[in-house]
Length: 264
Image (cartoon, rainbow, N blue to C red; front, side, top):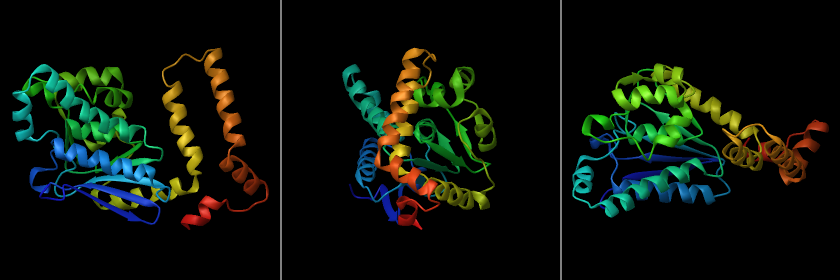
């Protein structure tokens, strides 16, 4: 690659991954997808990193698919298209299952796959005037690979509207329908991010990892005896874990647990 299309930075316990194709509004192609996947995998394995932030350089977070990449895929056969789409599927799964908190910091435009990147992060904040769009139907496509993550955020009812109309909507609207958690003014975005990161550092990293796993395991399942038994087993595992023992001991003795001391 002739350009650094993905930048990475580690500041204390926070890792930042930045899409860096500003002239193309961070539209992604196979190279961008591969670079993002590698960056998230590496940060996921780095025990010194407690949280990972995803950003986009320039005027936009991400405009979705790169035009030249889409022209190339238009010439693919069915099997080639499946293989190509699976690379994006791997990226989204990597982010979704990363064993530590992920935060999307969104501004400008987030179209198509950019909405998917927003949805598969654990926490998303977007400037109030960000423009979101699930634009695929306008070019005869569907938001298929990103659909599970987007639907989990906004629900089936909202997906029925925006998957079919490709309407543009603001960061404020995105918050209302559940795609993002916060939609501050542009000048307040970094303060909101700092507050979220500070809250994350108060939590035990092992417990956060287990919490993410638990959500994936029980979301949408009926609250039956199997789920009740599963959650009982999980809290027993948490109590027996190093984080659980240390956290409870620190709480009872009015002390700071080690994970807070490490990032203070």
